[in-house]
Length: 171
Image (cartoon, rainbow, N blue to C red; front, side, top):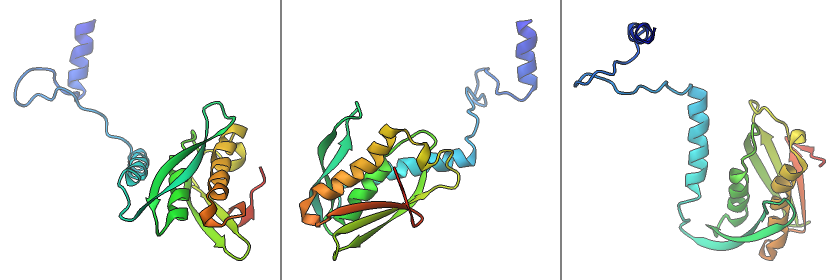
């Protein structure tokens, strides 16, 4: 029976396991193009932050601890010229919630009122919506952004609001 199975696999165009210069020891199935694109985007977003900026400044970012109770301060290096935008971008790129994907964001700063408005853009292909995030995931996303923006006094931010394509986000 196992001999028939091996002969059947060989007849179906599977690679041969015979030794020789033309033998292919293993042929992996190609990734679907969408999965490959998503993987490439994830890697690129992580690699971007590994390269130190040309004009570095150290800022404090706040991330939620593993117990979902407190924020932990961490120093990070970002571009001095774009410190706020780079910090927000880094926080968003490091969020990794299952089946939840952002396609982008816009950060609007109003120096007159000290308000930062972060307009999030949900990827149309995302399987989950903002409202489907657990309370811990919401705190990790919105809380870390809010704490980071408010606790860096050099930025002069007094309030943080969140919108999705211009509509206020209530959480």
